[in-house]
Amino acid sequence: MNSFLMHWTFAIPEIWVLTMACIVLLADLFWGDRLRDLAAVLTVLTLIGAAVLTIFEMGQSGMAFAGLFVLDPFTNVAELFSYLAVLMVVLYSKRYLVDRGIYRGEVFVLLLFALLGIMVMASGGSLLSIYLGLELLALSQYALVAFYRDSVVATEAGLKYFVLGALASGLLLYGMSLLYGLTGTLDVRDIADALVNVTASNLVLVFAIVFIVAGIAFKLGAAPFHMWLPDVYQGAPTVITTFLASAPKIGAFALIIRLLVDGGYGMLGSWQQIFVALTLVSLVVGNVIAIAQQNIKRMLAYSTVAHVGFMSLGIVAGTETGLASAFFYTVVYVLMSLAGFGMILLLSRVGFEAERIDDFKGLAQRKPWYAFMMLIIMFSMAGVPPTVGFYAKLAVFQAVITAGYVWLAVIGVLLAVIGAFYYLRVVKVMYFDHADADAEAGVIVRDDLASTALSINSLALLVLGILPGPLMAFCFYAMQGVI
Image (cartoon, one colour):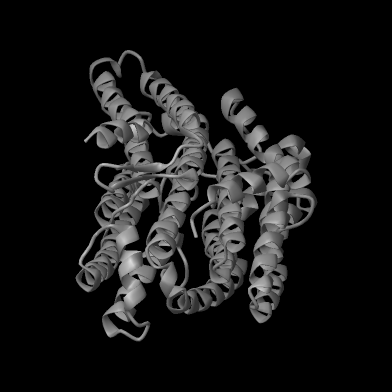
């Protein structure tokens, strides 16, 4: 009992976020009409407070709530990057939400509950807590996507995401139930111990792994489970798309760590081969279909599929180095997505969404600084040195080659070259095409906060590319003791 009372303090960041989410909800209810920025300010304070509490926990490890909660380096690092992603979304969001009449406290409350779901997944030590975190995140995302009720495409995207997301959650839950029936326990580490005595050819285990990996692949956006991604990214308000493309990816990676590594590493050979197939299909589908896109949000959606394929190379390696490289790639992708969609937010205004590639024509002549920022973002996504995207790709290629999958790395390199085309096309449009006489994207409404945040975000991609060591070391620290 004393141990339980002592270790419940491990969950203080989660308790803080939950408490503050409720406070934001109540504060907006009573004072939101008079203090329009109250919810946003309280959300920022919540994120800063959670980061401080998490930093104080660094170096500790243990379990709480009878094994439902796990504290380890991965928990801390994943939560810190999640706070950063949500903070950037909040900083980008104000003018966009105000212009569309949806600058309301409910958006920030849903963002905090979604963040809490990611935190619960990252710290889950039981199938029960992991699934509760997943559903908390998913339900918040469905509401966020459909929040802009005056938009038909947003409502349609929300409905589509809800239906397909419910199907994916059902697949994952069914896989978990099979795993529970096979091992007789919900505790992830006890499952790992029990699977030692189960042969890889056991039919129930095979079905459990297939269903779990399929559910995770949907949450990541890996092909062929990506069917929701382009429509939801395009249909959702760009602020919400920015969130969908960032923090939840860390939550999906946490699912891999908790379910497949902590719980099923002994079955590495079984799920590793499934990830080989997912990697190949994602790389091909993402990089090839993105070439045909004229809408930049859809292009970045298919780009997400391709990036999930590259990240999965580290998962395929199955080593501590491979997992650390995959986590490094995930974090880098989150930073790139925040910057890419942040640029679209900055160029958009009342009655205009800067979501066509042609909207970027001549941007270098009209707004050279923003064009330069977009160039860094596109170069990083394409993996052009010295941006951090290059080192992210290099890290996963090295890991998968070391694991003996040279042929997979060769295919990945070839598809990375193909994928560079659609990123460089955006650069070409900005620097070499002339804007139409009635072009609207060059007219940027002054937004000092979002502009400063975007500049820092974009320049970070260049600085981290020149000095990738500290971020890489932080990701390796997160993987300590995972395997």
